[in-house]
Length: 114
Ligand SMILES: [Zn+2]
Image (tube, rainbow, N blue to C red; front, side, top):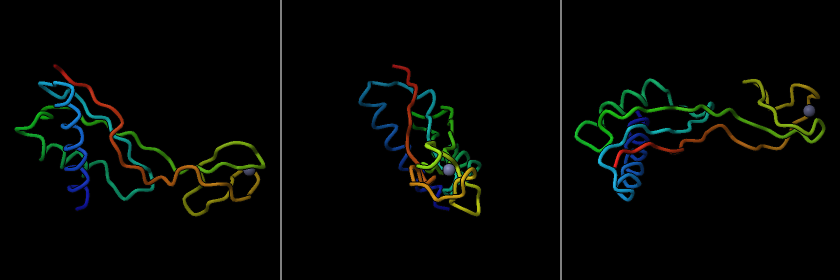
């Protein structure tokens, strides 16, 4: 159920930007959602459809980009995405430095019609 509140706040932010840019209509909203977050695409899309009628974003397309959890391995000198049950580098088995916890949820960009 928390998809409802996150979607409501994403829409508020999107419409605030759209209004500031003089938009008549929002064509698409691109959001980044971490793979390890508990947000489910279908629920986000469902609430997006439920919340947009009568607003600037009515009829807009919601595009969800999933970002993986990422670590940086100092031994291999590269980023890696650990398997679900571990945080270790799949190549050398050391635990790297956390780069992205995979829990992102934010507005990436949007297209508007002025
Ligand atoms: Zn490694």
